[in-house]
Image (cartoon, rainbow, N blue to C red):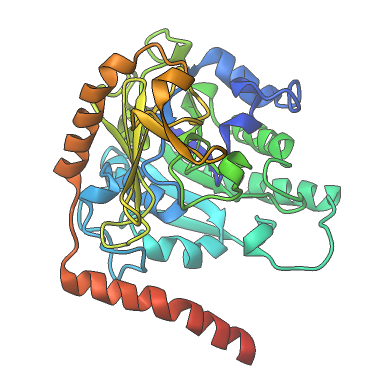
Length: 394
């Protein structure tokens, strides 16, 4: 029985990787490039949520956020009561291990708790370099080559220890947004590749899987960071696996809720009619839901009840919503007929497509009770007040 290693990197945008077209890092990721050449590259792989703990819950329970009993994003008080990917792997005879930065015990584990009863946690201090909204500081970070080298050496030592077991291993190694010693999102792709190279020293190439929990907006739609949007930069993520069914590139829609089948089957997961990605749980007012079917993507914004529709083959950047036959011209302050000023060859099919997505959204949409909405609204109102008071007295 072969070991399985799932390597994910937090907030990893596909566009950082040469495998998906990045030019800057071209030639600087030999390990990832070779695994992609030998394996299968998924071109339409979606996370079930654009934030870490929500993504973990879906990835390891095989359930979308709307199918879980979570009302809001909050710490959970007990282990997930269903069967997780880790439980299945353990029952199959694998020793289960997780390597991540110790901060994830506070930041993410408490909000997910879906790691089985027998998994061994390796909570490594100082794997991450906090940046951006996670690290308020003066000045500009500088790359520290020695610290990068030390970080990689520590990962090497930890993996060496894990592989001393005679049993096959299921290892999930979750690397941080930015590896310690680096300076920002996307700046550490060469170091990420070196980490993959370390893992290749201990595991066969046909045991290694590379992905992310979610992406980040990376300047699209005027936004950086992640967690509040379901546009492609945040939810369309990389996946490189050992070769499946002699297929070098897999171009059908796949969700990370199918991670167990991806890891432990030589074939592709059964094709789903719909793929979902959710920015929040069902009681949260700021929730945004994306539904993907074929080449179309529908987005529902709960806060202002707006809808968007994109043909992702025709408009990969999700620039112009096809949800309405008219559009408002902000420059001329007038409403116009969209098809007369925006060329799209398939206007006539959109009415049925819109209805289909609306019906699917209504089918899965779970409405909070008045009490749930009121309590959540109070929390949203009080949160900034609490934050301000905490700053004053800290």
